[in-house]
Image (cartoon, rainbow, N blue to C red):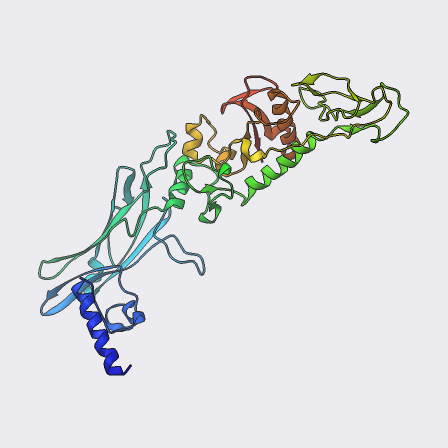
Length: 404
């Protein structure tokens, strides 16, 4: 195709774009992304213009940023209260007016309080946001705090130039900062950074109001669950093989398999079913042996210890994990610095775990014992609700709380 043909086709395309209500330019995209005049400057965030004395005067908002970006970090306009919100403008072709630019940060919605200061005069301005969101507790996400930034300047001819930056495009909290704002509102000791907010790898870790969670230590909940899972399985496979399978010439009353160590309030619990003609010498739960196993009439050790298959996944029995401060209070907790809000606690309800030969109370005690082994007795306990502490074998208990 010749250059003439290419130019003709481009012209037709441009006419089509213009008829569609859009603009068309022959400048390259890199040039269009810069400011007016092709000087390589970034385009202003917003501008307004008027003629004065035969010259076009432009009021431009050049910058708007939150906090102090780290090295190589892009500036952002989402925020939490306490972070500085900085803006800068200019008056092109009337620089003497820049010191008279009026800045106003207008709150949007009842959840957003007046900024400090509410207005400022000058080429630059720094504001701080405030929240009106309460701390009564909620099972719904908080609304975002948002502001409209208004810049204006009075021209010599009495006309006012005004630029508005709408919150939907600029100063509005994103999801991460809505969650972070809760910690500021509640005055918690843990204030998550944006890097400590993440989408959890397992849904069961999120029992809060948002699609993201905060963890003081990245991956902490997954690591805690993994450790508890390993310890619970060990406690459910701790019977002792007293006589090797196949041993002959034993008296019928010889113990072939004995229960492992005693567990908290419920004592030693057998985890083995008799095989061959071996006999259960202890009590039964749901017709499954929970005591010692004897050699039986043939005098041979037929039973392999810990022969019950464990088919459950511990994550299916997590009743609560991460909770944002509002959700934590709605759940009945009065602890502002709860480990749940820091991504450092799991509540487990094992009462319906499909473990043969175990009562719900025994399972509760096994889980608490596993927690004691992983985090220590002080940080593993049985509760009903958020504030009532109980013995692990109390029928009223509904979960074991484990924190670190």
